[in-house]
View 1: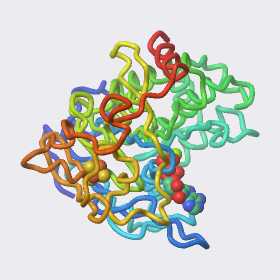
View 2: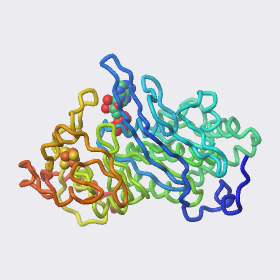
View 3: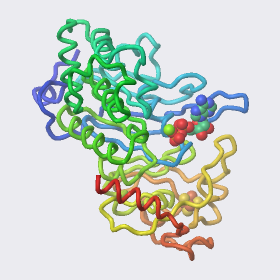
View 4: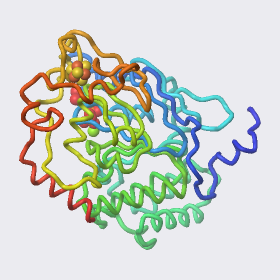
Amino acid sequence: MTTMTEAESTESRSETPHEAPTRRPLLEVRGLCVDYITERGNVRACDDITLTLHRGEILGIAGESASGKSTLLAALGRLQRPPAVTSAGSVLLHHEIGSAAVDLAQLSENELAAYRWVDISIVMQSAMACLNPVMRLGSQFTDVIREHMPAVGKGEARERAAELLQMVGIPSHRLDAYPHELSGGMQQRALIALSLACEPQLVLMDEPTTAVDVVMQRQILTQILRLQERLGFAIAFVTHDLSLLLEISDQIAIMYGGKIVEIGTAEQLYRAPRHPYTQGLRQAFPPLSEPVRRLSGIPGSPPDLLNLPRGCAFAPRCPKRIARCDTELPPLLEVPGGKVACHLSTPENPNGAIGATAHTPQEQEGSDGYEVMAAEELAHDVKEGDAA
Ligand SMILES: Nc1ncnc2c1ncn2[C@@H]1O[C@H](COP(=O)(O)OP(=O)(O)O)[C@@H](O)[C@H]1O
Ligand code: SF4
Ligand SMILES: [Mg+2]
């Protein structure tokens, strides 16, 4: 094994509080494709995904329902189950600084077990689907800790479990509770605590706050960020709510039809989203810091992955499309601050789709080419989230 330099060793996992995130890669995803093998045919839910997540960073993954977010998140930890299969690409985990990366896409189930919980853990939308309903919380924590950290004794594991629960604001005596004895918000926080039981370097979070009310969403999010700051793990966070990701992420990937159509820093996507789909999502989910206004949605529906348009998958809904959009697939090109897949955005003219004139009637109906919808309820939700 390569000897670590002093600087490197300070970045390896430790009990010390998290310092500034480093720019060392933790997960390098290259050309990843995931297919669902179905009777109707192979559904490519992740198509040629390439991204890098650095140690201690938060990667946001946004997109409408059925865009492939959950499939990608699961594939980052090789957690997908049949009928999903990884059909191409690699997921390189740099689990230790200075040693060779492992390609999770190539490992057997047995080999993967060494990395689950200790390097990568997952928090799903529904805690009850993940927690064992017939086991007390304490036993679930000690089982996970002792299975993956054999050197830890039973008493120590229980102490650690109590500490983890307290970190998410749950009194330690609830270790004796069954999951159904906790409120929905507490169950979700217990699951987050459990995901941290073996000090993973990466926590995958799939809509972890969607199942709870907006006030609880805020509390849980604040707790996640505090824990991340303190312990220094990286997060890949999936949600359809771009405004939430703009607040918490370092980097954001926008998915549409199984592909990344734009990826960039949160600042870039906040200031100047380049892809017309990202612009549409920004209209639908404005940052909480912006004044309350009427919201606009994206007309039309996400594409059928078994029957994608020949050119840009967003073309049928895009107010700015031009003739070649219907026939040519736009490649994901590197531009300052990120990458974008749109014929109007090129390395020479990265902001080409920002000022582009709309060619469809929607443009006349609302700002940025998106139809203004009477979305008072959504505006109310956003305001509530702000206040919580
Ligand atoms: N179990 C499954 N069997 C077949 N196809 C699936 C299955 N799960 C997801 N898919 C396909 O993958 C697409 C993306 O799903 P998913 O990753 O769950 O999207 P998201 O999380 O963005 O809503 C779905 O639209 C569907 O076509
Ligand atoms: S302008 Fe064309 S390539 Fe760009 S998003 Fe619209 S349809 Fe797709
Ligand atoms: Mg999902």
